[in-house]
Amino acid sequence: MGDKAFNVRWHRWHTCSLCEQEYHGVVSCALGWAGWKTYLGRPEGDWNRGAAMNILGNGLGYAKHHEEALSVKEAELSMLRRLGKSEYDILATQGNIASTYDKLGRLEEALRMRQDVYSGFLKLEGEESFNTLREASNYAALLKRLNLSGETKSFLRKTIPVARRVLEECQILTLAMKKVYAEALYEDATASPDNLREAVTMLEETERTARRVLGGAHPLTMNIEGCLRNARAELRSSDTPSTGN
Image (cartoon, rainbow, N blue to C red):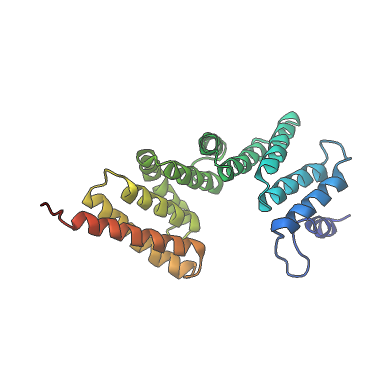
């Protein structure tokens, strides 16, 4: 079977042949199970079997069966290590596991694995790699969610200039990093008025770029707009003198 015929046949497990959109929700989960049952009997090192395990894990996650998805993804990671697969494949699978930890609310475990994945790609591909920058963005977002504002700001001060240089201002990863940095600024309980003004200025610039590049209906654009409203409210509050009795 040639590559083209193979791809068409394999894509049936995750992409609709009519609308060419990836399956999601319970359909993705059902096809994940169907694919896994189809290739389960093959040797552990068979490509189809490994890919079917990956699609099953993703399908379970799409259907919000996160505990089951975690079991599959951890089994996939163990298999990759037994087979001596590439560091890239192992890091990518660890990134998927970190996402599942996140969905399960196991944020500390997710953070440790995100840090490992970021460090792994940094060592493997260097700081200017798209994979490294993507994992840097994921790691920073999780730092911020855990209210580690100082660590978030320190990390992104080093990472955002690299993203700007490699990806330019309008790339979605750069926009996401700048949004997270601004959030860390204005959500910090110790933020000064200057910090708040910096956050507002950055979000205004980022919102204009996101609207131009992604459009007003894009989830990231709307998220940035919400952050900008919050930052402006914090700045107004800091500028309002307190009144005593």
